[in-house]
Length: 410
Image 1 (tube, rainbow, N blue to C red):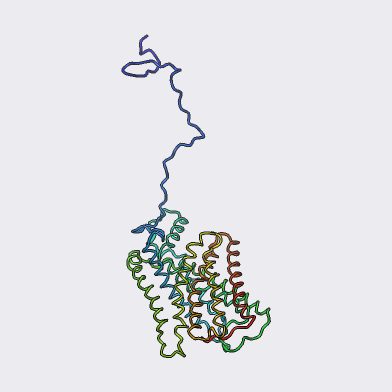
Image 2 (image 1 turned 135 degrees about the vertical axis):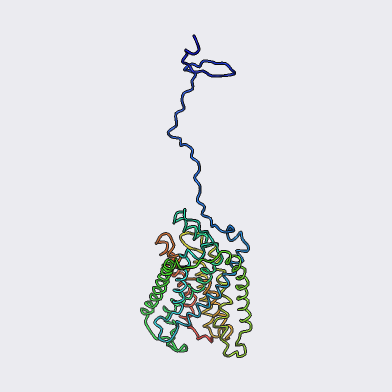
């Protein structure tokens, strides 16, 4: 039979043509419906900051760590001074609210809300070419990047944290309960006006509600202010902050702290020991303030991530500072210990500086507002206030309700 009359296929092998039978033809491969066809990998979204250098975690950058500490020291000094100054301005005869730290707590919370919501100040730190990224992911990346910037840490943890004080707030709550809250319209050497326990309890509730509600409202107002000023807020140049401002802040931060120490040793009014007030009013406070701020920073850094539903680091800082304030307040109001002007001023400096900077309202209300579930916020807030107040009832109440407080000499 001629080859061209055959309808079979042929396999050409080594120059020969061999006919293939139907039984030897391999069946066609049917696709498995349960097996996915491999697809080329999708390109991943690059959410890293588009900067001239990659921002590494704090522990991997010794220079960044030094800059962060310098910012914290610098802003701890000026945050404490701002708190003490605002307390003096708002504590006057006829003041509608006699808790001077209330306005500092509200102001610090307002600034904290602004810095948390702002998207312009540090735009160059994370990049501007992010239009293709989902808005939620873009904001998430921006907030994550801000937490690694030394200047941002200094403004929020340093200034806002030291501008506000949780320990002073709890102290005022206890003094309201004990009917010993300072009143600018009353002679400091006279006793408090007599009232029953029911009125004292109502005073306690008033201090709690006013401080917590006003601080939370100020936090939200600060966030709205950041959104309203979005188009007007300037962008800090990356080169200026990282190449110029950060190194300068090392000198300013540590220099201001060292200058405060020298002023504590040789105060400007040293010539008159009887009327020496500089150290007790501010200098001792700014000497101890950076210590409290740095301790709070490291407590939050190492403990806050342990329990996502309960910021353990901030809680530990607030409770520790409140307990130390209660002990210093007792020592200051005991005859024989607080009779020396210098010792009384040192105790006041520890309370205003170290305890005031170790504890914070602005971070506390920001955490209350940012916890994922509402019951976590109620639990965290209630435990913080309850433990802090209970600690002062034990430390300060045991002295007040036994022998009483003596009037301090400073």
